Image 1 (cartoon, rainbow, N blue to C red):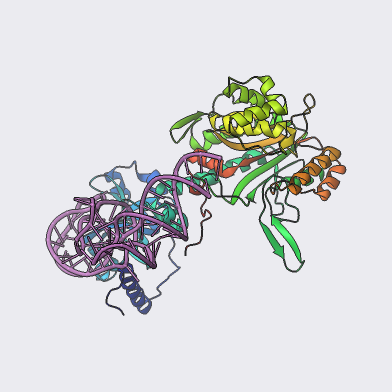
Image 2: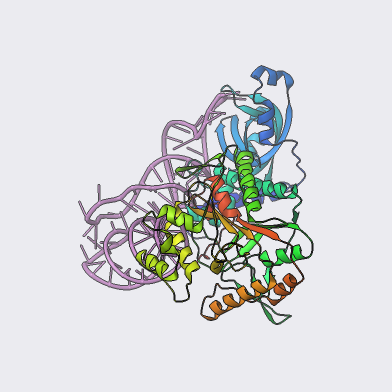
Length: 498
RNA sequence: GGGUUGUUAGCUCAGCUGGUAGAGCACCGCACUUUUAAUGCGAUGGUCGAGCGUUCGAAUCGCUCACGACCCA
């Protein structure tokens, strides 16, 4: 034992010694305690009762949770315990516990320990609903001290790396993840009641398809073959539509081998859904209804506050085409500037957009859109008519063969959703794949592979279908007012320490 | 990838132009039967992110690295 031990080691050692004593006395990690209620249920049921009503009713309760605070005042103490629902105060006195227990047991316990307590509800002088404890047990000894109670954890890194501490300490963080689950549950219910069927499709794919993104590669030993983590489930879900599951959805992880940012995590959650005998306009309407429903049912309002802005989900969402939106936000431009490749190159160069030789008119339009429009789309907005060149899986528009029957949805300057009428013409799809392969061969490692099996599926006939993907993480960011995607991922990707 | 910025006690943070390391909370001891950031008194606790350099002397100045945060691409 060295003379100068770090403070934390001393505290942990003290707690270990207490645990050793517990092991000698009794079962140190008992499992036989059962609670009959949780904190918020008590607050909801009894907080409105008067002191006198509670005294006369003498309601007995059994609670369990982590001891978050404790104020010892001689022969009596107050402590707050926290369970899955919230916190409630315990009033523990020497004389209501078995002889000696208060001094030799309870007062030796530590903040962070998990306890089970039994007693009668009452209200304190200042009116806080509390439990007058007459039986209390230590259920789990915590060997490590909690962070400081008042400021909580300020270091973002600890919040991400030790999320359990963040969840113990921060009501806001807990709430964010509760809302995340509520949003997903809402979407699941919304689609299920519209006859969509939830399915699971491969995470490990031999040909990574469905999005233009760089995949993670892995390897299957027994089959001696390369596999890729999926960048999207799209092509499998559409195979299911070919198979007759005419409305399907999947809520699951995608993996993209790209950089990290406040809006990007290598694994992220998407919902994709496909509806046969529908087109992209139907899905815009469905999306609008669904998002308004999330706002109303999960957040309780159609006015969503995000950072310093307010977004209004009550009004019909704005709809305009890519070209219309460029002209709208660039009043100095006119149709002719976006009508030919040479004109668009001029505009793009003026905006300092790096241009590759392979860019066609459509790609140039999208570059101009992303540079000058995307971040300005604050209120809920659908952008439609995306160029064929950047939409290899979307159906070509019948009137304008340069664009597809596709939309993206934006709010707060961020893309949240992407949907389109699916390309169910196998010959057109094969052509599009071939163009993607040319781009891949030219060095674009985000370009798609040629998926022969998928073409075969389409050749069996896919009914007219519309499909959409929504980024769940970005959606949750919006509805929880979270500035970073890491705030809505329980365990965001972090570089390993050391 | 570029810019800005951070890393000091278990936690939250001070630490000025370089001169022997500070507070609050937590922890330990004493007192206290309605507190709630409990209170009062006392004590313990540090390889100042890592390395190299400048200097008589570095938490402080410089460089490199590690890990974050924010902004930009």
